[in-house]
Length: 449
Image (cartoon, rainbow, N blue to C red; front, side):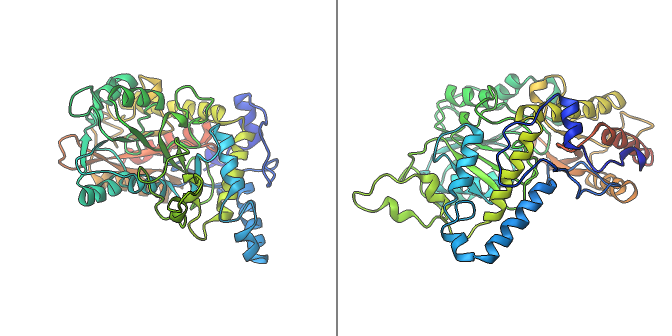
């Protein structure tokens, strides 16, 4: 596998390719000599949309923190600013990195936790309308279904266009198609959507979503950022994707950011939100909101104190952010990932004009995910949308060529089930050699369908 032999893209090479410089490095764990050395030399990993890897500085940070915890557990939990239950350092770090205000961030175990804290914490009433789509992850759908059963809310699920039609839309047209200004959608309590859709790779800019929510008079914009943090610049510096456009934004640290498992964050726009509008689910601090005459207590802090958490992981997640900054920052990493992802899409579209699900015509819909249907290399317009074929291709690429991608189901608009496609993730450590190797090995596998 000579063409894919580099372990991963080194920091030095990344900076050369992007023209970036080292900025914003301030973590406890140095990132100067950091790389993705844990990824084997003979393995091409193109599945960060499921799980990212970790650079050496992140794994070292984890090891150091676990040793510190083991040497003095009680002090670590009760008092240590990096590892303690209130998480002052790591919360503050994320707030400064994202450019948001104090007490607007709670560190969480994953996106699902953040979305459940939000959707189960909000005080929905019977008849409240919540708008979502048929392409949402169960991290959104499951808590909404609970609220539907318990509180009798009304879930309005909007259907995405068919997979083969997505590229005919611009970002503005797609958002208008999904959420038109019609009576059934106006005045809803919440709009619950994904920033990047895992089944298609479609990216919906947060600024456009905010404008649509305001147009429809929707109270809360709640966003699943599972496929965005570490891929897109969601800091306050971003005009189109600042997290501050949302009322609630939940994201993981373990996918595109390449932080440890069991890490993430929840952003709350209203740092003064409190019961009965919002309740601190999973928290040990509800009493703070019940004490007569008690001073206002920040909800983000209340959500943080919930027992023993993955504190070593939270500190290592900030090291992953430092590593991202050492590559030139969020906007430079976004530029790099989207450029390579566009190359993948172009290769596929040139080979089979009808296989691509992810959009290429409007760059603002592009993401680091590329989704396409398996096709016959000899007859490129002959597509396969069944589950068995998609999983067979994934297995062949992994077992025979040491290349990891993923099979993914795409819900059909008519509700009759799902079509199955293949998904490629472009990460910080992906190189042009990896893409060339992917194209070569894909040809070998698809030639045998």
